[in-house]
Amino acid sequence: MSTFDGFDTEETSYEEESFGRPFLGRSMHAEAVQEDETHVHEEAPGSHQYSYLLTGGRTGGGAAGVGIETILVRDVAMERQAPHSAELALIVEACVMPVAVAEVAARIGLPIGVVQVLAGDLVASGVLLRSSSTLSLGDDVLFIERLIHGVAAL
Amino acid sequence: MSLPSETMSIPGRATKRPPIPVKILISGGFGVGKTTTVGALSEITPLSTEAPMTSMSVGVDHDGTGSLKTTTTVAMDFGRITIDESIILYMFGTPGQDRFGFMWNDLADGALGGVVLVDPSRLNDCYVALDYFEKIKLPYVVAVNQFTGRARMTLDEVRHAVNVDPDVPVVSIDARSREQVKAVVLTLLHRILARAKSRRG
Image 1 (cartoon, chains in turn yellow, red):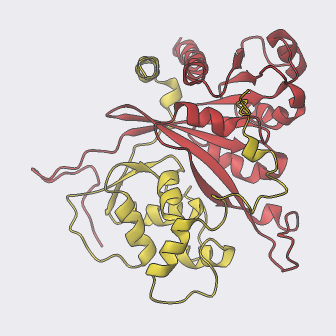
Image 2 (tube, helix red, strand yellow):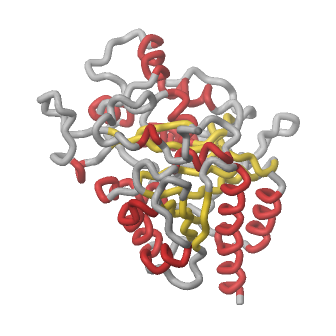
């Protein structure tokens, strides 16, 4: 008899053991990031204070229009220039292929809010291209029909 | 720094605009099967990213070490499904609890639709997600994750208990089944299509 019933067993004790989950908090990637850096931060990556340092105190991606699902890709037409920080370099590196902000955050081990802000900067300076807005997709009949055909064919 | 428009491309070195992301939220209480659902359809092992808790939760969550730390993070699991060269579907498993309410707006912004997962033995856990989707008028379907050995309810009983509009689909799902998760997503997309058509008039 299978013990796996389709419910997320790893989630059931979430509240009690939220810091014991492998992907929560300090991921392996986040530690790797720290090793790459030459200077020492007082706060560990992912901590509240460290996040604010990285973004210069800014929060959210709303102003730059960068959502958690916004897809980014490095603009190959742009000259490669030395990024201003290790974090920016990591983000640019992660965007060689089109990838969503949330995926970048997960892969390089930075909080999603930090990546939203920094990615917004990289879009503004032309280093990254971003996907167009998705706000009106729900009213686009042709698009939804195309999506339905695509999902049905999976 | 003055830069050319992002849509401008240099001949021979053109970068195509990135694909359009489609965001679908998979919500429900803890342990209801959100990550399993995401994983059933995702082409990648579900990834997890952390969202920092903001001041709204300060004083609510303590890390138990006696430190003064008043912030913590919450994980969000998500998966990716490439539809074609210009559309990528992202399914976000979203914590469906009151105390994570601060992150709902960021999650729902630009979302195409939602799936509310329901565990019949813990019906109450789904109400936060239901109420939120209703409030922001996000099209959604209710998917009942039920198996032998767990409390069972008919779909009609669930519909009656959660009291959703008659036009909100209430379907059953085996969150482990790729085909069933696909069917639920299609049910959601057809509902979104119907709404788009009715709006067009």
